[in-house]
Image (cartoon, rainbow, N blue to C red; front, side, top):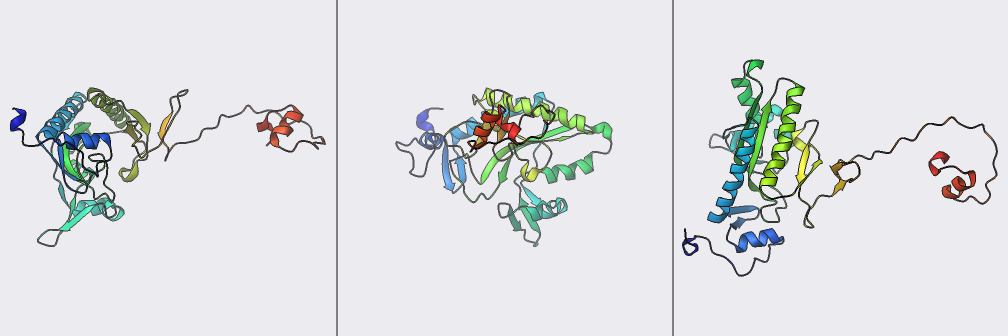
Length: 277
């Protein structure tokens, strides 16, 4: 197709509300157009780019045994009430009633649907493990959408779900996903760092998130070049090096008239500051 035939047009200047360089470039190049706050149309060039990224995701997920499917965006409220998340999630969840007055949900994730499918389709442990994934539209009514496609209300997400017979199987799937996501970012040319993160409303015992370092980011990471520790500041743990235990010395009175600080006292006694506690 010729550029002259392209539906979207390029812009000389970025709109005033575009803050990040990537947002400005996507708008000026005609990849996206904003319909409302946090809601965007993917123009032909934007759709092509997203399709290429989705195909990379499919390659890497299929390589670890994933089976692609498509689950609905609209869910009956009952399955969310059954897990309790109907009551736990606040106004960011899209809720409405159908014409019969039945409560419905605009999905932001699909654990409830997968659980419902699993109890109907899985009848024996011999059917496990199973890894399913889909690439689907999601809705989260973010109160502060910003930065173009970085923080939106309607978005496309690749989410996968593993059904395993034991913890060992779950750990295996987690390691496979951990590497698969690195492969996806590498193939997209995006250098990322995997850091430990909060499990959030998803729950679970362990979570990692992949971070791209940028001055426009909202999160703060704690990284250690010496030991390789990496975590989001919200969940980072302080680990104090244990000191060797020493037998206590006999008690004796010591005059310390000029030792006004811990440093002075340690220097006067010829010991380390930690030994004064």
